Image (cartoon, rainbow, N blue to C red):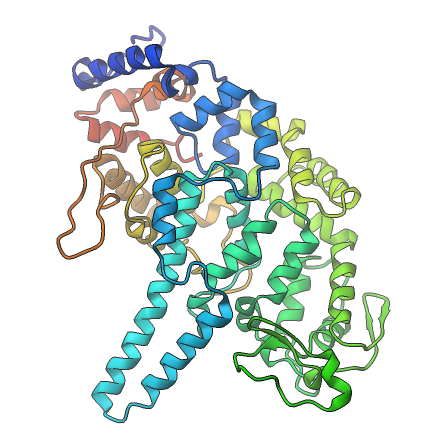
Length: 521
């Protein structure tokens, strides 16, 4: 265990951790477990694994070592449509109400609950009924966050989970606007995740048709003669071309006119329409294209003449936006900022943008170009990418408990809220910042240290089930494992190693490791 190039092991290592490590090496040597497998990982492999997943852990390290880097990358870039989640995590998800229901049915049920609460005449009873309604919406949002967390921690298709968070942030909606709390889980599960590694055209279309987006950016209120430009502006400014890419206010107005009539309808019966418009009506779940609300005039959009003919105009506008060169560049820069650096090399951005254009917006192809580029390899070697709060918390829990499935995500939801990056909780359409200046201030770091102590010192409620008699099940984070001794330890600076040597207990050691500069990156 002694490394002559560094200071001696911490005092408590001489007993508990030393014995435990010896046992781990012996057991894994016999049964071929994760610790022994992890020994052969190179610093590049460990950095790659940590960068493209929600955090390195013994089981993921063992798998990469077993299959090799290129096969692992292929698995991540092209995973099966339904990659099996750990059974204990899937069981929790299946037990959640509404998990297999469609937004229309969910929204109708909650709409009826709200109406019933408002019809109560007694003031106190009315207030109580309205509180029950609000709490029910809060519960649905917490369950949606729980599903997201369980998939992030335990799904084998880790890159898809990383990109699901990225695209949700890119196509951000805020859970506390209107009734979006009851729609946000379906928005992530059906409009984002299935397309996170696919064609950008399909992803943009899926978000455009989803009631959460139409409610959040007010397009449900957008009608001929009563234009609402909010969604049209954000599609161009944030979702596709980007700021300063050449579109004008006239283009925003044209797109808003194209989007008139695209909205939400929870009524069981169709709207009353003139006979000549009835064939134009489109209803799919809660989504509705109402031709009576659409501006059928011709439009000039980004230099293209779009003939007024109904919902087909939207498809034409989406196609124009997806294939605009500015969209390829904007999205490539955003992805590179997320994975490579806050100011990604322009050479890398242009390589990715070229792939976006030549592959018709294939997200996996763009990511493949990125990870095989020398600029990406250089960023792994420098280790300069600072973890945002979600990456920090998820990576800490993955390393602490590996594939031992937590039973309660509420502590994690609370930590993310305290760190200012709560799931579904960014109010404005621009999403959370991907730059370190937003996350590395003194106040932020103090909260991280507190969370490191909670994760490092015990189960922190992660293994406490619901119910009045619930108790924390026994669990302790084992971070000083064979992955650490055979790999991660070699990535630490002498300063960090010296600090770890001062630990007075396993809990203290865990806290110091999770607070180290190396783990923050």
